[in-house]
Structure formats: C-alpha cells, structure tokens
Image 1 (cartoon, rainbow, N blue to C red):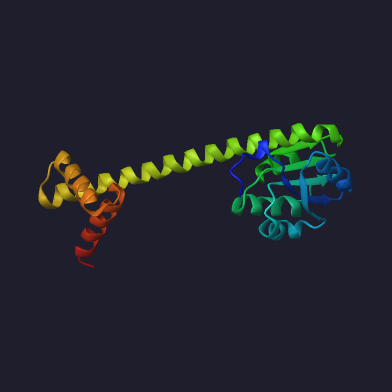
Image 2 (cartoon, rainbow, N blue to C red; image 1 turned 120 degrees about the vertical axis):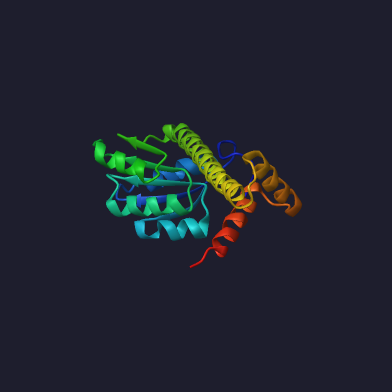
Length: 202
C-alpha cells in the first residue's frame, strides 16, 4: 500500500449501486479525475467480499435511500476493514442519515448528484475518516495505558503484601525485573499476578 496520503493521490474506488442507478455518471467523473474504479456492484451482500478482494481506498454508495441491508453490510465492513465511505442519497429524512453515520459512513450527501461536487466530497470524506481513525487510536492507547496502570498497581500491592516491600521498593523491583527480562512493566506485572494466583489454594 502506498505511503502517500489518500488525499494526495489517485484513488481506487468501489461503487455500489443501491437503487439510484447513477453509478455510470460517478464512474465517468472519477475516471476523468484520474481515479480508478476497481468494481461496480448492485448488491449489498457483496460489499464486504469485494472490499476484501479489491481493497479499494474508498467506497461510494449511490442510493435513493440506503437500505437496511446496505447499512448493515457497511457497518460490518467498517468494523473489520474500515475505509472512507460516501453515500449519495435522495432521502433527506434524519433516520437514514443517522443510521448511515452510525454504520461508519464518512460523508452522507443529500439532494442531487453533481459531478463537479465529487472531488471536494471525497476530500471531506477522507479527512473525516482519518480524523475518526486518529481519535480511535488515541482512545485505544488511553485504554491500554489505563489497563497497564491497573496491572502494575495490583502487582505492586502483591509485592507489598507478600514480601513486605514499600510502594517505592515494589515499583523499583518491578522495573528491575522488566529491564532484566527485556519486557514492558505491565508484562512483568502480569507474571507477578499470575504467580501469586498459582500459589493460592483452590
């Protein structure tokens, strides 16, 4: 996969015809802009498999109103193989828009498909997708750090209870064990916790 950011290179695009039948117009405009349409499908059932097989940079869904099947398959795809998704819809009601965004859609565009709008819409979708991905990574990192701290505190407590170390001594002991073994502090903490659990009577 290229290291050039999506917004700065030609895109590979999977088109999904979800009932509006305007994908030829979209395909022609994408080609004119220098992008590559790697597939055109007319069944929501095929979205996940096509994403796995074709590995598009972006998925575009052209719809009168996105069906439940389409949104469900987009949600599955976004969970396992996330990428920017654009939905063009003629339905201005709030429910399908909200459901689409919950399914991982990056841009939901209502009221007409105008070829000249395609380039900025793609840029907005990519920017939002990248922002969401960064936020998810930050959340995952924060949760991992919190989990590590809990493990370390529990291991320190075991060392304090079992061999009478002070909190500072317990922390130094864990740090030395980690350095000696070339492991992270949290990994050593898990070993201490597991060792104490093994010694407990059933």
